Length: 396
Ligand SMILES: Cc1ncc(COP(=O)(O)O)c(C=O)c1O
Image (cartoon, rainbow, N blue to C red; front, top):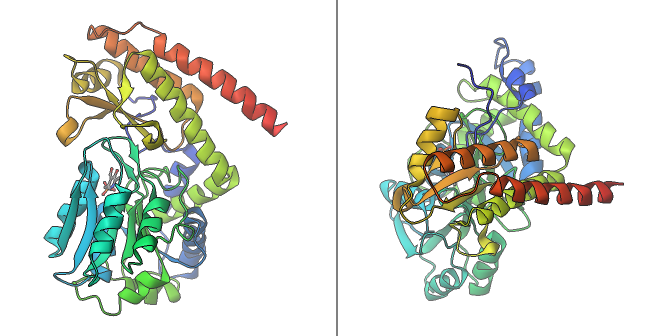
């Protein structure tokens, strides 16, 4: 069966028809001017989405993880220290990658469900009077727990400590869906992938690089070949790639950024917030709660739903897939079974969100969970009806 159902995993996200068509193109010569006509708007559009004018954008054929490796290997040297808080599977994996790259990671262990601990980051930086810490790593949106961290707050903490470390931000599940201000927040490297807010298939690592990050490249000694920024910049200046680019994906990216900018970034963020808020209303109506510890941490792209005692979130995900052909996200690592995740980012509408909530409720009823059919859907319907009235009034 070819399913028409949208997915509710926190990436890869649903691909709009217009983007799918843009990716599906015949072969062109990637060393010809035709390629530059695809590639330049994609790069310029990503700059606008990152909200950087000072920075540069590099697009690798890879995924977000490749973007992390590129960020680290181009700017740091073996034995360098980086500072990172661990509060979920993705912040953990970034730490693991740095350790495997031969870096020393000063880890601030933080309970899952919390965000980046600003006071502890500031204290660690203040204590580092010799400036051993070369970079602060921050996971903007911890996809495992549905927690958004305060990147502007991290920048304030770094400034308050008067520390010169670079700020690297994993925006894989936030960029293009939630407010992100590369220049405004003083982000030195922003990393994301094509398969979330950009609504494309996986296959591109997307990086924004500040002038300071580019300068760090001059002295960084970690080995890099495929991910060498210097090679990419040289080739970009000549209108192409040092190797064979993923042309179809880049064509899709040019379309994607145009879609985001045409809708208006603030409107895109407001849509994500509205959809997310409806989902949260449903979660509370079920008598459950988001795993994120407090409302200021709620993510507008993914909600990890804490399931009732005696229930297993993975059972719901498996049943949704086998019986209703709908995809939700399982709990990862420490929260396996304790949560299931609803991805609500990318090309999603209120109506699609309601369908996902209805499917989750059917699974809960099938599994004998203590939930009344329709309760979450009704709460979200109420919210969307009123939120849309307000949006319509504001637009009038
Ligand atoms: C926050 C975050 N960081 C990093 C990654 C890894 O990205 P990728 O799977 O594109 O390599 C993911 C993937 O879901 C993520 O959600």
